Length: 354
Image (cartoon, rainbow, N blue to C red; front, side):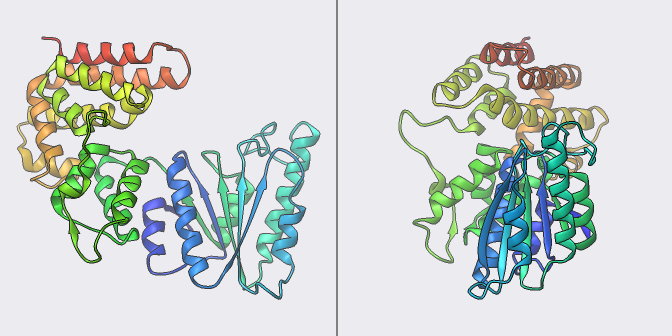
């Protein structure tokens, strides 16, 4: 079949379980991998499939999995078999290693992988196999086998113009209807943090009335110790208010947010949107063209914030800030910077310096 994005795969699941005998789920976005697996499991179990789970690490251990795939079960004629490839799987040889990888562990894993590929080709009609890879890519042989007989789901970090589509999909899967204002509030509050969006929807779904569209008030948070709404931080940055920005940023850290998360999930996407808006404004384009480029409705507060920030900071400063923020993100993940809060605060101060 083909390689699909997580968004396309999840949309297809809404109409029923996948007809593909094999589904391989991989990609650098852990939440999307787990969410896709959870939705796949829910669809199949609702159709009477029995769930079986296995794990494979760096060493032998695929015998029980192969037996489950190839043996009959009188009490479970229809089965969904899930195999989770741990990060340690073929760690010494690498995901792309061949059967001659160095070391007995890698060689054993490679042999087990060849056996698994052969078992995939012989899957019975009542068995469905899902393989979840905790690495960014699936092993080459498994990926090729899945592409021939099933689906490979690539769980990448969503682009800004896909966030509204993911939100709509998550809400439908939770059985919720959202007003336009509520959707905009969730996107501005949580940005590209998909797990936070799903958590917010699941909390509201507990008490939501069926068929009633939810509004902003349904997602309000109170209390002096609450985590600052992320749209408050974005508003402060777009307005160029350094005191409010640093205060909100510090409070978010104190309530448990991580500087790496805030930088990657909120600040960089915000600066990127402002940079796109500034580039289009410099080319004498209007807000309609900016909305189209960002994939946002004309009435979106995210669009308004991007345009306001573009006019406040201008193109050159935003370009420098975006480059510095991306460099910080890379150095954080490489472990080269220890004082993360100070580094992000310094970047924000430089952006808003007159």
